[in-house]
Image 1 (cartoon, rainbow over the protein chains, first blue to last red):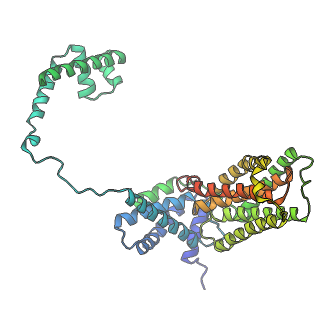
Image 2 (cartoon, rainbow over the protein chains, first blue to last red; image 1 turned 120 degrees about the vertical axis):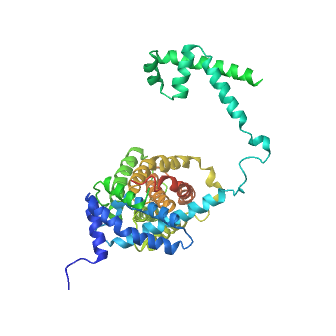
Length: 190
Length: 215
């Protein structure tokens, strides 16, 4: 005879400590039950891949955490845990069925068309050159606003500090610059 | 996130929690609160001729059956949110039997020559419907708050038992505070509204008792 608690009793003991707020005991409990939970899930979901099993394990552990107050210290721990695992597995199966019903399988197609004209990217560089020219042609205040906000991607506050103007003035300058660019680039394309 | 990181995070956010009382004790606490509330409601709403329609043995038998059904249903609701409890199905069967007994007491006390088609014309019974639904709302809210501290293992069943418990006890309140012509009307109207409450609760259960909502 020995006074050491059995492994099953020790899980209950760890949970009791966890309910008192003992984080170390709680981590030990979760690390102890995780392989068992994983094993149960693998047995119940023989078709599930490694990632799916791990998803379900990660579904069970927060559930155990959420309802840890429902564990009665006077009762055995394992039936309590198994009831949660079973319930989460059923929920997982329902979720899977629901998603499968809504999913539409689409054949993988090429993302571009095979016609040569559609794969010609020379227009992009022409557009870029035209855009640079159009930006250079903007009045000083508008050009600075575009460079700071759109090209360097500064925030309005940061851009205002760098340019020494107000946030409001920057907004107006940006708006006017965008309108000018739209007009200029539209004419270029025509 | 890998599982080890998850365990670390759960350990870090761990706060002490008081284990919930056993289901029977929680059900008793709720029933005592419900009795006090309904007692006050009956005292305020009671009319002088409330029991003039029949305060005999049959009347009290149906009230006792409704109270027993309410007690059992509330206990079943609390049991349904505790993982790993055995004998759950026996309790659920007991609730079903209690519901049948309650309905049987009402049918047995109904007049033999009652015109059942006249049930729907007794418009004053809408007051009872209001009493059960509106008067029972605070009880339902209190019960839902208590149940949400548990595990949402069977949301539809939990909500249905909760509605049955509230409906049963509120029905007793309505019977004691408002006059009723006979048990046939009580059977149709009270039984109908309790059944409707249970059906609506069973449908809404998964929205009220969900793992994401559990704390």
